[in-house]
Image (cartoon, rainbow over all chains, first blue to last red; front, side):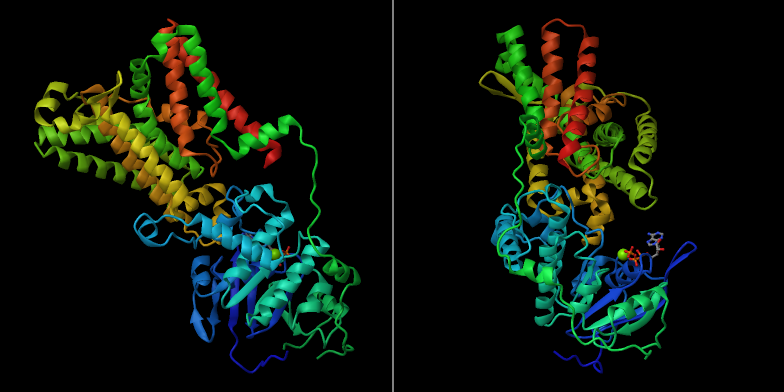
Length: 260
Length: 360
Ligand SMILES: Nc1ncnc2c1ncn2[C@@H]1O[C@H](COP(=O)(O)OP(=O)(O)OP(=O)(O)O)[C@@H](O)[C@H]1O
Ligand SMILES: [Mg+2]
C-alpha cells in the first residue's frame, strides 16, 4: 500500500509547547499524520511522546502551537472534544474504570439508550444491547476470551484491561486512532492480535499513531516512524530507509538526521 | 539523509508468528479457591450482601430476645419511621460518597431548608407549596455552593463541607432568630408542611407519607444510578477521576450535579423532618450528617468512591434503627446503643478493607 504524502495530513501539529514548571515536556514539536498510514512514534522514556499525543487528543492543552484536523485548525480543551471529531485514544495508563464492567467501560461516555419512551424520556440504558455489542466486538477483534461482559474490569489481568482499552479505540475511532504503548502489558500472543488489529484498522482506511518501545513491532507495522527526542521530532524515517539500530541511534542522539 | 544502509526486509519475529497460529483461548488459570476467598469475592461482587446479612441476623436475634413486641407490625413501622430522616439524608450522602467525597453539611442544609420553608409559610404567609419550593431551591443553592468550592476552588470535600456546615448552620440560627415555629401554627396555617408525618394504616403498621417518600426517593436514585448514563458517570468519576476524564466524562459537571442533587434531597429531608417532629426548630436534626455517614458506611459503600449501592444505605439505616429499637425494647441503656452503632461502623469499614485487599 502506498501512501500519498503530498495530500493534506489528517492530523497535523506545529510548534507545540507544553511546560510543566521547569520541565519542558513538548519543546516546539511538529507532527504529521497522513491518511491511511500507520505512524509509529518512538523515543526514550521521558522524551515527551505521551505528552505529544495528549496534546493531539485533548487530554492536555498545549501552552503554544496549533493543531489541524483535515486541514482545519482545531483547539481541543477536553478529550471529549477530540473524540467527537473522531480521534480515539488508548492512553498509556489505559483510562478504564476498574469498578465498572467491560461493557460499561467500552461505552463509557456514549452509552446506548433503550429505544422509544424508556430511552427518550426515562433515559434508560440499553444494558443488553451494550453487553451484546461489546461481546460481539470483542470476539470479532479476537482480543478477549472473557465470556462475561458484566465482569468488573478490576477482576481482569493487566493485559486484558489493555485489551478493553484497545477495543474501545478500535470500535469508536472514525478519523484517527492513537495508541500509547498498547502492547506494553500484553503477552506474545495478545501483542500479535493487537498488531494485526492495528493493520486491520489501517486497512479500513483509518490512520493510526502507535507509540511503542518494541522496535521489531514498530518496524513490522509502521509506514513511517516519527522519532521523538527531548520533546521534539528528531527525524522521520521509514522501515525501508533505516535499520532498527539507526532508529535507536537517532533516538538516543548518537546519530543525527536532517529534518525531514 | 544520513549515510546508513537501507534495511529492506521487514523483520517479523518467528515466535510471534508461532503465537499467531495457535488458535483459541489464552490459558485459563483455574486455581482452587479457598472458601474464604470465595466469600471475599462474593462480598466484593455484592456489596449489599454483608449489611443484609447483618440486618437479618439482627432481626432474628432481637425477635428471639424480645419476641412479639419486636416483630409486631406496629413496632416494625416505628423503626421505619425512626430511620426515615437518616434514610433520606443517607441518599444524599451516598451520592456524594460514591464520588469519593463526603458531605458534613447535609444536616445543616436540611435544618436551614426546614426553617426557610417554615418562615416563608408562617411568617411571610406564602402558599405552602411555594414555601416548599423555595426551601428546595435553597437546598439546591447550598449544594451548588458546596459543588463550586470543590470543583472550582479545588477544596477537598471534607474541608469544604466542614466550612459550609458552620456557615449554613450560622445562617440558619440568624434567619430563624433561634426561634422554634410551633406545631400548632404550622398545622393551622400550612398543614402541607406536616403532610409527611401523616400516617396510613396498613395491617396494623403505621406508615407515614414521609417513609413512603423516602422509599420513593431510594427507588428514584437507584434508577438514576443504575439505569442512566449519568449514574455510570457518577460511579466512574468516583472510581478513578483521571480515567473518567480521559474517557471523555466531564467530571466537574458530574460532581456539580451530584452536590446540587444532594442539596435538593436534603431539602426533601427537611420536609420529612417537619412531618416527623411537627414543629420547626433550628436545633433539630443536628446529628443527621454523622448519622447519614453511618448508614452509608454500614451499607457497604466504600469511602474511596465508585463502589456501593444505594440500597445498601437503606439497609445500613435499617440496621442502625433495628439495633437502637431492639436494644431500647430490651431495656438496655442508651449509651450501649451508641456503643453498638460505633462497633458496627468499625466492623463495616474493616470488612470493606478486608474485601478490597486481595480481590481488587
Ligand atoms: N503531569 C506532569 N507533571 C509534571 N511533569 C510531567 C507531567 N507529565 C509529564 N511530565 C514530564 O514531561 C516529560 C515527558 O513525559 P512523557 O510522559 O510525555 O514521556 P514519554 O515519552 O511518554 O515517556 P515514556 O516512554 O516513559 O512513556 C517527562 O520529563 C515527564 O517527567
Ligand atoms: Mg509515555
